[in-house]
Amino acid sequence: MLDKRLIEADASKLDELRDIMAHQEHPEKLHDIAMKAVLIEHGAVEKLTDCVRSLTSGKKVLMVTGPTLIQNTHEQNVKEAVYAQLQKSFDVEWLVISEPNSIVHCTPENAAKIQARLEGVDCVVGVGSGTICDLNKYATYTANHENPLPLIIVQTALSVNAFSDNSSVMLFSGVKRTVHSRYPTILIVDIDIVTAAPAEMNVSGYGDLIATWTAPVDWYLGNVIGMGSGNFHTAPSDMIRTQCERLLENSEKLAAGDPKVIGDLANVLTLSGFSMGLADESSPASGSEHVMSHLIDMSSGVRKTGICYHGTQVAVSGIISCILWDYLLKEFDPKSVDLDKCYPTLEEMEPRVKAAFGWLDDTGAAAKECWSDYQKKLNKWHAHKEEFKAFLDNFDEFKAQVAGWVKDPAYIADCMHKANAPCRYKDLNFPVPADTVRWAITNCHLMRNRFSIIDLLHFTGVWSDEFVQMVLDRAEALDAGL
Ligand SMILES: [Zn+2]
Image 1 (cartoon, protein in one colour):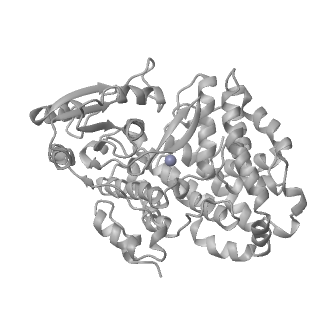
Image 2 (cartoon, protein in one colour; image 1 turned 90 degrees about the horizontal axis):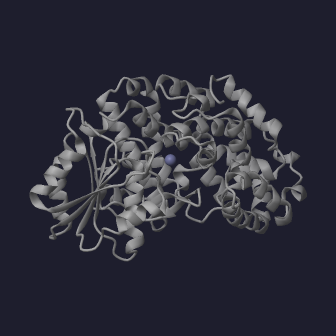
Image 3 (cartoon, rainbow, N blue to C red; image 1 turned 90 degrees about the vertical axis):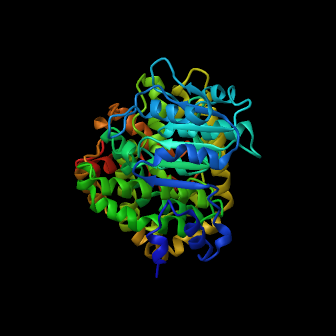
């Protein structure tokens, strides 16, 4: 029986959450959520001054934002209001991070702009969506690993789950990498602000949660066959699964902007961030669906297009990953696997990885970065043959364990249609052409160290252009995919 308090967890009750985790099996495997407070309520931002005072007796506040206008449900300018509030009690510097075409990226260069202003600062306040949050987390953490400055994030959209975790997704040499950073000390989710965010941003947060039906299974798979980091625990995903299920059932209400459902989305998204923090890795919320999405982002520079809403793109890839899991659990035959043919050498794989990513830049930096990570996975795969053999022998046991953790792809696509979430790559805010989608799906397992269902299908000889086409055909039948 699942712990009722766990499956109905409230992200704004951190002490209760710590108590719930302390009562799970193997609590020592669950990392602490190193935050002081999470506020999820109407008008929460009005408590910002008190929040800063609770963290420092100092006077100097650095406020960091992006360039875009953000309004709340009362049509007030959120950033101006935050600045005015802070100015009443503190000595505030307002730093606007911007780039020539107004899309701000999570790059070390942008983080350096924040770091250049930290001298003498007592508290950093970031106001914005995922990129501003990740930049502030990364900048303050890399400036001082041991004792980073207090950081308050005023979340302006329910666009991703990454506000409440201790990592940042950064672009290094054009390659997306999730790196360890820090939690915000306090997270403020004002329902009056996030409800007024563009509908597609909140649909993006809903989309990020579609990974709940694929990423934890990838995480478990990696763990079973010796390819994980040893952090696997059921509690992080058990904590959000029931509430994610309810959200799927309320897809139509979300599309209608129902404030109760938006409040529920805020809670589950924050918990989803915690699930990564509890595991001390992003695996509970980032599996094969995220890596497909990462490749599409990586190609955007060459294609000279913007980066799509993260969660919306992840959800379209999520349908593809759901189809893969459906195939594995219903059609994959472990007896057909020729174990001796499952272990390509480094010499065989290096040119394939380099060919997959070589076109992304003139210097070969992206391909080099991907190969350096992929070869770690390949070496580990060779070193854990025994676990994989045992997995094949006990495949029915594995299927029984994960049966309740996956969803029928048709159901997921149906819910997404009801939520007004794009189900096709060509319907994303920057439409992705079919050849890029095919490239991303086909090669995504070559990008990083983390094991997913696609590695399993690749090493067992299932993964091919024809197989990817079959998956796209199945998606097409659900009014999804290309
Ligand atoms: Zn995500």
